[in-house]
Image (cartoon, rainbow, N blue to C red; front, side, top):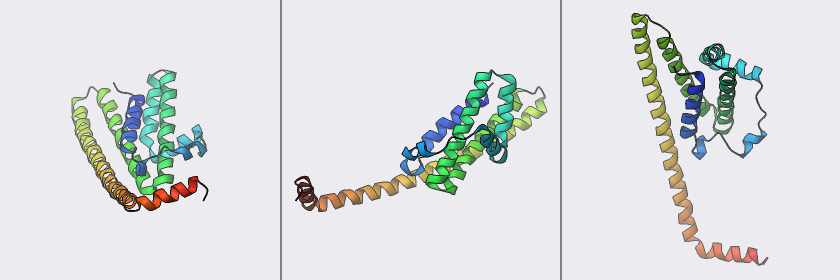
Length: 185
């Protein structure tokens, strides 16, 4: 049976893959200046924005080792900090998109946990249908993020091509300016 630790690790990996492009990045030099989040702040955030995480954290606490629970808590705090960094760096829309992906993954984990802990065939069938719906939603979400990322990358390519064209066009002037600066003229 998967644990919250597993899903939070998966969430972290997916998030890192999806949001590593410069525009979507949440890890940069300014992150060191951000204050660390307290456990109370993390719990408040989770209760408000990711109540599924609280339930799964409680499951890990009650059914797995204290080390697994501590690691799950750390992962939850990291995800919250990533959300906050994205919100600060890229805006509310990107942060909400990030949070939506985490929420869907947690809902999937919650449904899978329920499916694994019941012997009721009818309930398992209902849970399978709900799980299929959530996995489909996650697929669509990841597709949307990928399309946005591709759009951003295309815009970056156009910008870089313009910069290269400008460098080529002004090659001699730029070289002369650099030489003058080196010689303090």
